[in-house]
Length: 465
Image (cartoon, rainbow, N blue to C red; front, top):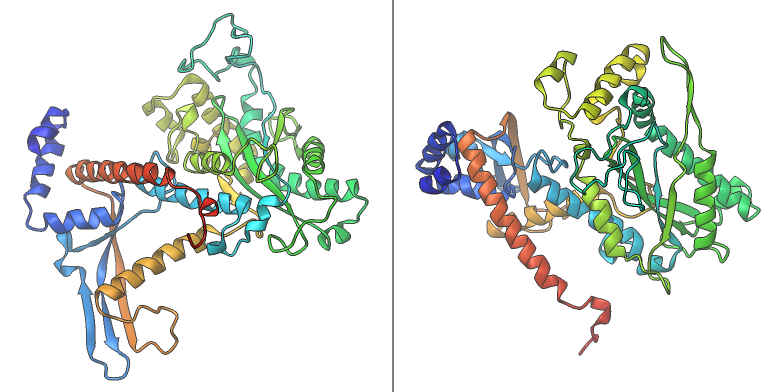
């Protein structure tokens, strides 16, 4: 192992710590803990104990304490959704988002979503930001305004052609108000649907329900845009069929009209003039689902949403942590375009303190959630996590010979636990080893995924064959 680490150019401090960890008496147990976290990059360390007793006699059936663990702590996954911070936990988060979004397209009986919703009108809509000035790009003509033909990996892509005239203040204010723009869009969307079928807002609620699941994505120019699955249901949500007038054509027209109506005013403050924020002119709407002639598949949409749910503003090469003081910018290696956006956040913060632009400067002003959904779209991330936690709890109880039914009110056991926070993260050597374990686990997942991809869907199999 030492030879492998040295051949990869590991620095002496990391190498020495790696050898310390590998030669420690509790190394096998440490590896087991890391594997149980999925190779988490920044696990949370806990100290404490748990005791399970027979409820009637008080006899101890099982006890556990971190005193005998490596370092005296138990490691649990950090749960960070950002792939730049923890690839392992981000992979789990992306999986949850994938199943949540796909269930809202095709249904999933395990989540209580009927399969009939695949026939409800549904579209994949993209709402973009307006222009804040010309940027280097790769148009269909193949040649940018600057006269060059940029390759895909050209760092100039997305940066301002004329930085001195680019509206950096407008760009970060738009990002900062993107959540308000989306909220108003959903309001206008319901109004547009009602108006197009001749119903009042109250009558629409009794006939049809609009559900959505969306994700935010940063373009290379540093502006946020939204991708959303939008679906029309009956008045009771996924369990009821939509009315006959609910069509994809209606949804398409209503989305484009609603986006055009949205306007968020920003008052003038200090040296900054008043402005009105709107969606960009590019609004793309594509049909999805099980309807005849539809090419955009549910897997493609769910995968796309899950991919961007684990990202932040990495496309702009910004940092993935908050910037505490403006002077920290001098210590960071940032592209000039990205730095100007961050500087604009700090300059605007004094004029608009209620918007907390400096706090969200590393996100170029955006402070919304990257993945959100309406209440009736499908399941929730909380429910997905609880299902996973219950499965692991039943697995452990089975291994210890305890009753598996967690919901049994008359369960004969009583568990008492006490935990305290003891820190987070790995030492340098532990980080190297954890990353190696994470790569191994990911390779196994990819192999399993490829094997499952070759199996036919359950609907295609002969039942009872």
